[in-house]
Image 1: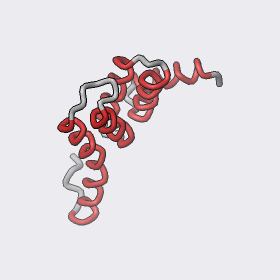
Image 2: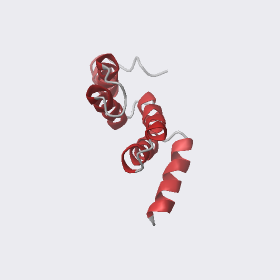
Image 3: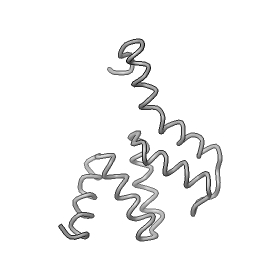
Length: 101
């Protein structure tokens, strides 16, 4: 599969809500295409879906001020968000599954 068709497939998956695909599309646009608005859009969507790598990437972007205004509060927010799935999982193992509906 060529790069163009791979990217098109990832964009299709990202539009359907696949958090990993959103992350990969975001990384592609942000770091490969230098299209920071599009890349940031997809990275934020992925982070909002609690995809750990997207949260960690946004932490680094805000912490370093990489094409955004450096913002330690936003950086910290995404660092904590990156740990949320782990925290929920550990809590559920210890006390039961209270986070699931």
